[in-house]
Length: 317
Ligand SMILES: Nc1nc2c(c(=O)[nH]1)N[C@H]1C(S)=C(S)[C@@H](COP(=O)(O)O)O[C@H]1N2
Ligand SMILES: [Mo]
Image 1 (cartoon, rainbow, N blue to C red):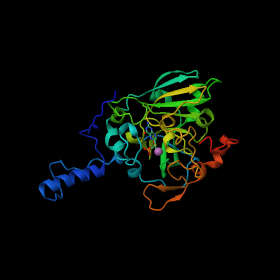
Image 2 (cartoon, rainbow, N blue to C red):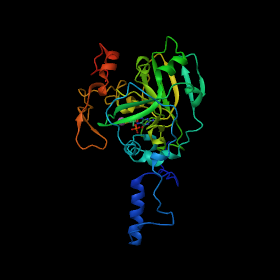
Image 3 (cartoon, rainbow, N blue to C red):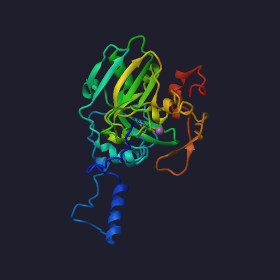
Image 4 (cartoon, rainbow, N blue to C red):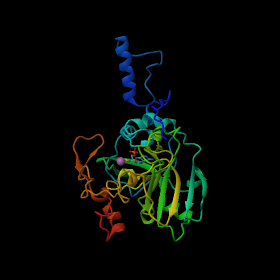
């Protein structure tokens, strides 16, 4: 049985500007005073998230980056979907700070030679860190452009030596309701699971990201390791991965379980196939007012359409 508990508000690590403002407004309404500055430290502005991430060394630029200008770090790190920390866009930035991302291990399982439990640094050792500036399109019809920093998933998979029976790759997020208060409620079937067909996982565009904007990923964006497959809807891009399993059969993903008519396994961005409850024809870029047309495969059709030749993309949505 699930016990519903309000989320714990950490004493430190609150970086959300709106929370700062609401606190300030609260104090203002209690005291009836506008406090312009303070020496008590009580109202000290929180450290902006932009300075908290460690800068990642030796990051190489990539030819696969888009030349569309990236969104602001502040927007990308405060408007998140990470249901393990709550279902609103604001909660992940408020609560994910309490998740411990070090040490972090990743279990490699299934149809692969190099099975085992790896420390994250060992798993990624000597893989090249690249900056990939990618378009990102959430199924909820907002979008953004993000300079991720990550490793080629293809390169990692090569090293792990999948067997000939490895047809799919399944990814699993950490399950730890003490650290992830959203998991104390049955909003999804925890832990969060996603998957790719092996040819999608080994496509040159697929990466495992460890950073963004040149720095270590903020927890709310999926630290310390998250998937980025930029031609797919945001929900495929699973965060805080602890397990990678190679399988012969198609994994059942969390969102397929939650709504099989709404969230398919493939989840390729497709402006011609609407979500049952809303249109997918347009998107609103974070920070912009006017909507723009959504592109097939999120603008990556030239690179990835061939993966789906002969498939009915209305059926395999
Ligand atoms: N574990 C986990 N991964 C997740 C989610 C989640 O709730 N839990 N949300 C997904 C959705 S719906 C989106 S749009 C992206 C959001 O990534 P961002 O917060 O970095 O923008 O993360 C995806 N990965
Ligand atoms: Mo999403």
